[in-house]
Length: 93
Image 1 (cartoon, helix red, strand yellow):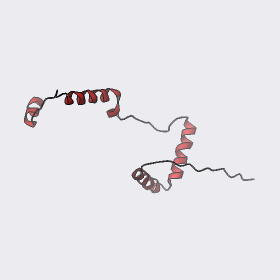
Image 2 (tube, one colour):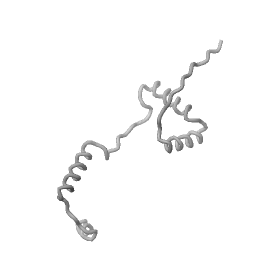
Image 3 (cartoon, one colour):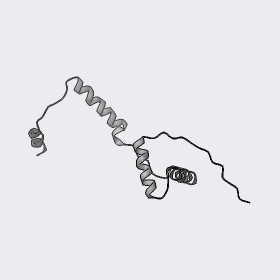
Image 4 (tube, one colour):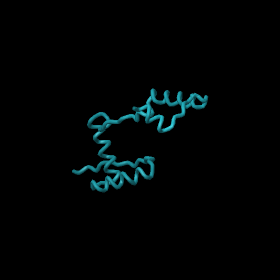
């Protein structure tokens, strides 16, 4: 006796350009988005974790954001130094 797997539909919101680029890559691999997503989910279940490393963009890290906000505040208060390119190059030497 052969049992059919029950399926369900899901809806995912994704940037249109991102989806088109992913579709193109998956197509080159001989699969569609559904197959790729099923592979991702199956690997997640097998490994008990996301099956690849996820890295945070260091630009948005707490330390960098604090420094950025402080720089903006200082600039708004007029606390900044202006240098020409020649002056910057001279400082580098």
